[in-house]
Image (tube, rainbow, N blue to C red; front, side, top):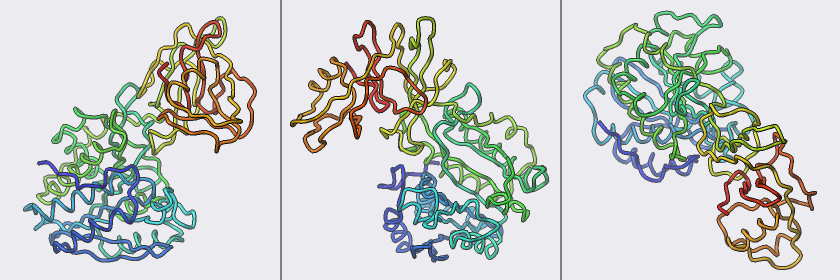
Length: 425
């Protein structure tokens, strides 16, 4: 069974306006939908309802506005259920909330319009979005709750595994993280589906930390004796828009509902407990290996950027040391090279910056730019490291600095990294 992705949602961040044509199409096709409330800024929050069975399942996404992979998954799933309704809908009532935080989505922010993290608002219920989710849980009274998020692309499935394209958690209901009957069911369902779908043979799968936080909605809902499963959509190599995680999440939700419908549920937690734990910062955008930092000092330089956008030029030097074990989406060997002082090109007259001109400037040591920006015409896809003032020549590499550097031998630049991007010289 394959769930075909709907068009125009293959984005890193799906916004409220992106969702409306798909919601309208589903409504026009007869899917039951209703506004469950409005965000702080008055945007409608819509729930879609499928089936009429006794087993109630609730799934919600994008309570963090910049985490929208599963939002697309829910629209894909809803469209599939509408066009090809499965038999299990007679045994399941499924409620889908594709976007809980439309204001945050509009601002490309984790938080709602008041700066509140909705997923830390389960007790205070200070946000209208938190109240909506709380009321929905109370009114719908689900037996199962699927809490859908995005995780940083730095997570790795275990110490030496692949990037964690998906991570799962059977959410704990108390500070002691006891494994009672309800949580065991959630663990078993995760394990069953990983085996049946063979997801671990396709991508990296990790287990999310079960640290308990009473302010988090998953933990608070689990405390009501509801089986809560957290699904974290992550990154896969050569998949910057997280479409693999999108596809797998939609299919996982479909088969989860099918298992719940036919009650093919065990209490065997073995497979779940064998999932490798997520390793934070187990991956990096770029690792530059074997940089000669001093006469007898070789080290790797680790570069990471924006957690959402892998193409962002806001990359920094995040770590320096021995990182041969780290999973890198790109690796460059700088054996025999050392940092070379970078010069700043001061623009006082018009400059047409194409690839050839850029290379010539780099050969002369000019890696950064400053001056009158209106005189600069950029005709290259390479990033431009713009500074607000003339910067002193710099060779030392420091953690936290922008990931711009020149490496080479005998003052000759052989490798240029500008805003975290390798420039072909």
